[in-house]
Length: 209
Image (cartoon, rainbow, N blue to C red; front, side, top):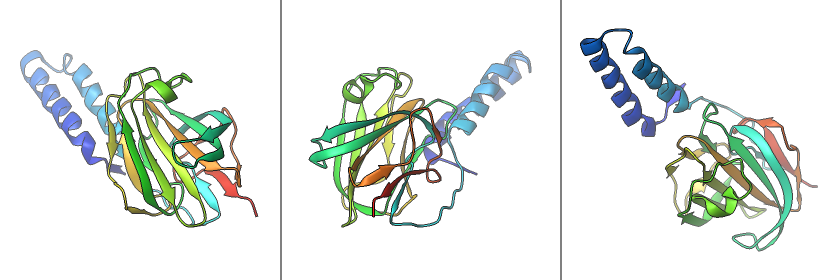
């Protein structure tokens, strides 16, 4: 188990607060900041995951619950009819995002916005979000991190031109969010609304032969 470096300031501050409260007010009063420190450690976890490489499948980019599988016309990156899968992440899910496929980042866009609850359909259009478009020569896909009601920062560790590996961690969203995967019509979606998915483990789609 690894702790994401972006969580260190939250964890260290909560631990220091716990120690100060314990010193000045006693152990009972230190319970609340202690629980907060434990939550930050839990939230910023990044469990080690290994998955078999397969260029014909797309792994889930996030842990969470599938909110929707819908037909769309993507005019942001693919510019063609596509399928969009939306995954909702609660504060108890792992929040690290992983690349569904191998590919080069050919498109990247950060959009400021509001903080509508991530489970609402309007969040895709109103909220702060960060999108990356991947191209591996066989297929292009779009993955978008969408901030939620509690999410106040989208973190990205990659940029244009970065060569992503299937399952590679590329960013996270702090405190509640959703992740969208947009794929071309030659990808057969293997999940449905209500399914629980695990980033880098659950097969979300398969290229039709």
